[in-house]
Length: 276
Ligand SMILES: [Fe+2]
Image 1 (cartoon, protein in one colour):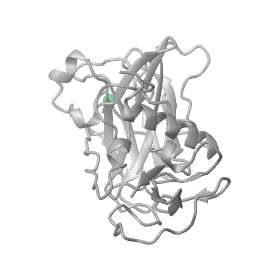
Image 2 (spheres, helix red, strand yellow):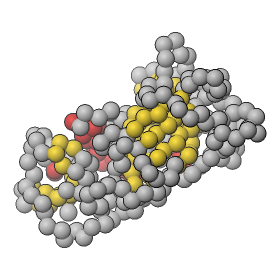
Image 3 (spheres, helix red, strand yellow):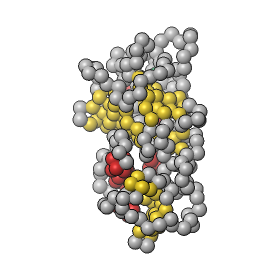
Image 4 (cartoon, protein in one colour):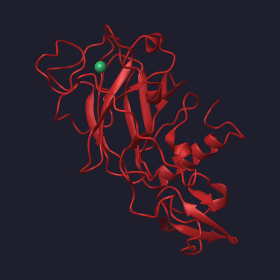
């Protein structure tokens, strides 16, 4: 399966999401096909409540008795690209969205990533392969890095802390499908698998976080479906998640914040508009 397979509703929606992110001037999440379902797919189902991303902490907080391996360092640089000139390794781009449990995308969420280099080593003197960023107005993020190396006792993984402002920190890890050590690593959790595919000599991965918070400011999918439409769809209008419009006599609810444009009429962009 690829993200653009005709007849694949997930593929169509991902394309629309990419366009929405572009229109919003956002960092474009690079989306992957195959593998586990992404939360953005479930988020399009009215009334759906998402399960939060599981916690997974292998002792990354600074603890004096940790001898080797993972070690979180505060004050990582603000950057979405962890690859520096001359860095060896297979390029990896991770893209996705952060949602609240009510399926609203969460802008401004802090994502702090850190990982091992190709030899399986963490940089404890500097900030190689460490960086933090914030989700954009659509709740999207993109990380450019390399495929991390393996080290004893663990399967391949990325570390990340995610925090909606003022809310508890989620410390977790993201995993790669098809890794032999996934079967033996006791920390491995299939709910934390990214979708990963080969692309352009590197890998493109996708993962959507779900934080245990009630998200956005607009009406959520649990609002009564009988809410009256808020207006007639028009191009060039900024819509927020939860906004309701009519188009050709049908009612639609906005799923992703975006600025509308000709060609993005609600019936043709199911990732942006849900027909009610
Ligand atoms: Fe680690």
